[in-house]
Amino acid sequence: MKTKNLQLVGSADSLLYVTFPNLNDGKCISAFTTRMGGVSRGKYASFNMSFTNGDNEKTVRENYNILFSALGLDPERAVLSHQTHTDNIRIVTERDIGKGIAVQRDYKDVDGLITNLKDVPLVTQFADCVPLLFYDPKAEVIAASHAGWRGTVQEIGRKTVEKMVSHFGSNPGDIKVAIAPSIGKCCYEVDDPVLKGFATLDYIPQSAIFTPKENGRYMLDLWTANKLILENAGIKNENICVTDLCTCCNSQFFHSHRASGGNRGNLAAIIAIK
Image 1 (spheres, rainbow, N blue to C red):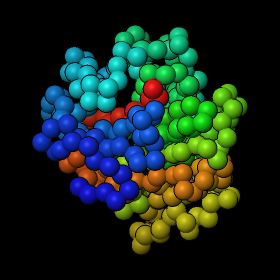
Image 2: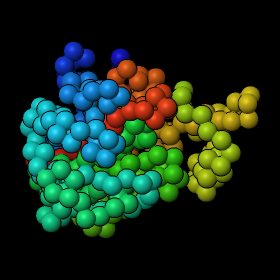
Image 3: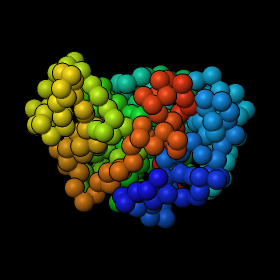
């Protein structure tokens, strides 16, 4: 597995994860997991980050311990999303610290998290959908959002930026974003209802994100779609790092819902500010 846009840390023989050159500046720590270097077994092997897909809870906790130790973070302070393909975004406060790992979540239907708290990692989970990680180094605010095709159509990327602005005074021109590994246009075949869903985004030419196929279906480029949404929200082109790793093409390294037919674990996107 090779990448020109991202950075691979570790090795396939042990812990391996992805980082983002535009985010990691010493104050911000971010990572996206692979399936390498954990203790899960079977279809979850070996690095599964979900407590809700049937894997052993102690095993998943050990996976978190392994990763967070490597990142220099405390998993007991992490806050996990509760993803259901919505555009709901939660402002994480001190009352939320540890929810999803140390203590039970008291919220649901949350696909985005934002905070300005130090040493409070935000965690979202994936197995082909698009991870969006946000960092404003001036306002010292971070965010993580989950953008499947439904979240993308609902412009969760734009709404995350707007909440960073309204709640924490961020300037969109200062915000840096990483579009992390996810299913690429090479592998993401969709049908007419998805095509029609994107018709609501009139500033995105459908020819820019859909490639028609002979079978009447389309290949969808969610990376470009999310990049255009972010730019429309005021994010500078040079502040957006776009993945060049498809989770489906590289399913030996990443959990992929499409490649596995749904028999898989979950990857995680993590971001924290020190």
